[in-house]
Image 1: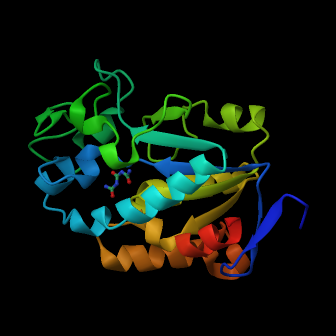
Image 2: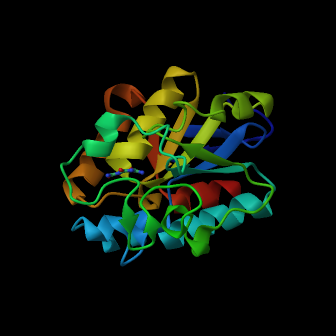
Length: 225
Ligand code: TIU
């Protein structure tokens, strides 16, 4: 629906009516352990350059959201230092020699308060921007994100971050089931695997936008200006 405070963003499968009054930018898990050389992601053999290309477009989108005084929220995947919120199945998954909670290259892996768990400096949250600490892949599971969004009257989410097929996709699906409209700018989400990047985006916009819309940060910025 077009309103006086809405702008039209060119998107697939059809244009997205972005309401300035009710649209938050949600940045998913842009954490040092996933993106930085020498972090946990790279230790597992992943090519972090596939994720690092999202930093600059996210920086521009974040700057625009802040300049327009629109709501911004961040998430981090991680666990309590005593690991009491870490499911045993998640702890042993992958059969790795080093797993969540163990000492890693930037502190204990995916443990809150450790250096590698924190958000990269390029996209660091302002004190006024809520940071949602989540124990799962989806940002709604076992967090207060839904309550915060409802309290602020937010019904639309621009979802960015990493990784496209894991935490971004899970969050978009969770948001969709809770009634939110989600728009994913393709240049602002990243996967270690190019084929998952392509299919992760294709799944969102398939079947008439089964989970949401896909666009590009430049199209969102053009609509806002
Ligand atoms: N944030 C997020 O996607 N966490 C992951 O574990 N992603 C992987 O791709 N492994």
